Image (cartoon, rainbow, N blue to C red):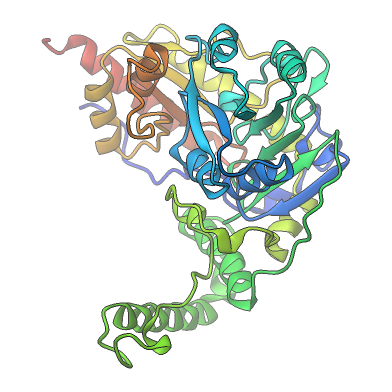
Length: 412
């Protein structure tokens, strides 16, 4: 494959000195503009808390889009409810006819997702929910900033959830918000170990991608000590879990709780021990100090620049024809004509990608929703976050374009 020299490109925002610039008012509303906001450790924890606020419990049903992250499902099960999947259209909008078909006395809530940072018009779904006395949870995990037809993200749902670690350079973070109701839960801290890990891991990720070099030099010794301590803790936990430590079956042999939620390590697990725990001090400080105007402006600029750079290349098309004025993209979602071959080449070249929906909940397939299955198979998302520098963005575009050109010339 003919591609530029391999680079280490941050797949998510990483801290830099520029993170705290551009602190003017964002061009688009934010989830944090809602009247009631609770900053928690992940979007999936916020989903569980939203369902609890709606009174979802055993015997209830929750409607979830068939195109989804598997992390959306365990919070429903935590409440003792059953998940029912509804179809979506090729542009990811909900199939309202299918939702209406699925409604019944046991349906307590519907989840609707703004995919990839493109706000959807949820007015018809809102009206449908109101007519049947059903709660609407607005999933804004991909859509921290934005509006559609003058309606801010998070304003249509009874409750909305966000994933702040997709938009800010932090290790953990999510939010539960509501513009319609008060939030009843009371948050408490996650402990000293959690606070330390949240800060140090965010810094280490920045250092690994060449950011904050002076601070990296100053913290070299403390970070070495941290790594040694953390390795020792993991070894002790592994020993306890296998019964080779202080005795099988004793309290001492049980591994302790994780220092951070599983969501920070890219798993799909839901750990109820993180319900009602607030996001770390470090993450909350970054949310307060980072420039929201810069986040919106640079993500939009990077999105448009990547699409322009790939224009005319064979074997792909954008999921969305245009970037609306009200969108702050999470990634650049593209559809591949030869998905598996392209994914293999990009992975080998070191291109960071999102393959959202490639792994759906067991049992969800083309028979459930053909559009969801097709998107999961064909879609790949390129990073367009605000911490990409111009050279990194240019490398991404050149490498993807080289892969597309090579595949166009390869025999089928």
